Length: 335
Ligand SMILES: NC(=O)c1ccc[n+]([C@@H]2O[C@H](COP(=O)([O-])OP(=O)(O)OC[C@H]3O[C@@H](n4cnc5c(N)ncnc54)[C@H](O)[C@@H]3O)[C@@H](O)[C@H]2O)c1
Image 1 (tube, rainbow, N blue to C red):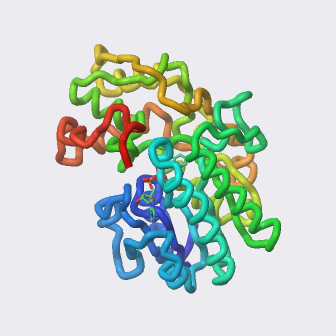
Image 2 (cartoon, rainbow, N blue to C red):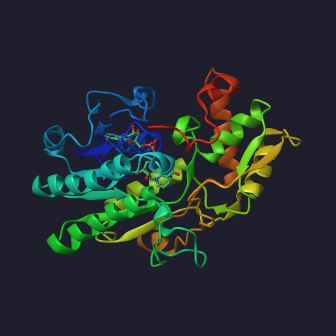
Image 3 (spheres, rainbow, N blue to C red):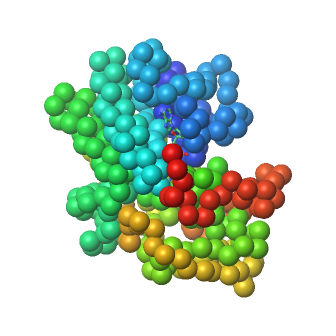
């Protein structure tokens, strides 16, 4: 993809997926405005790509005056800024404010400001537990959490701007992603980084529930490429598109994969009570992404786990050091 001469604004661009998307935009020749208030993102996630044409603005997306100014002259907006699923359990109002209300405000600003394309990065959490698998985009949406509900509201507003005003919007539904810069800490901590680091540190992997819940894990370079290609294609305007691996695995089997990849075949796996609002089954049908943009994932789960392991080992911190800011039951954090 050649994006020379184009300028994109990426909200949440100092976060896990956003920082990979900014790398791919920059590699394609685009100028990038990264907007992130660093609530969960980190300057170090993008420090190596900052240049005069790739700038980090530590702005809150709810600051509409600043957002209006930053959107001026942009060729498109990739909207990824959000507060996460476990945050929504302890802080539902703030979660709605950032994930839903701010999305509507950004749609309005971008449309009024003449930004030609609005790409909303939603989540497979809008589906709730799968009623049938694999899940195409037409699968019913019954989110389990305020996060999933707020992301669904953001999607609905994005589609409404296309249907009501003819605005060129795209909704993308990534399934669970993992890879370098993924979160193990605080209420952002995700299962794969936590399993890997805990195993490396000789601590047990903790499964909430019986481990039969499933996910469709996608390596972050595949997720970001899907967002970029689906976000900018002509075929996707007004569409909602899944981006996933099309491979379903139980959390129990994931823990066993982590044992294999780390070589700690006797690593302990323990079970604790279910997480409230946990989705029990997610498995992407990616037929639509294949048809519209020729999307296919390139990194298998085994390869991706090995790459993440190598990345941790290259960071100059031990697993024990990294785990200092891990919270095991991370939905119980107080706001
Ligand atoms: N990680 C996944 O597995 C996954 C799966 C499906 C969908 N998604 C979606 O992808 C997007 C990125 O997710 P991620 O995993 O990279 O999360 P992340 O937390 O790493 O990134 C979100 C970023 O938004 C920033 N942010 C939060 N509130 C903000 C505000 N008010 N103003 C400005 N910035 C703010 C955070 O600091 C963070 O850097 C989100 O929209 C999420 O819903 C993620």
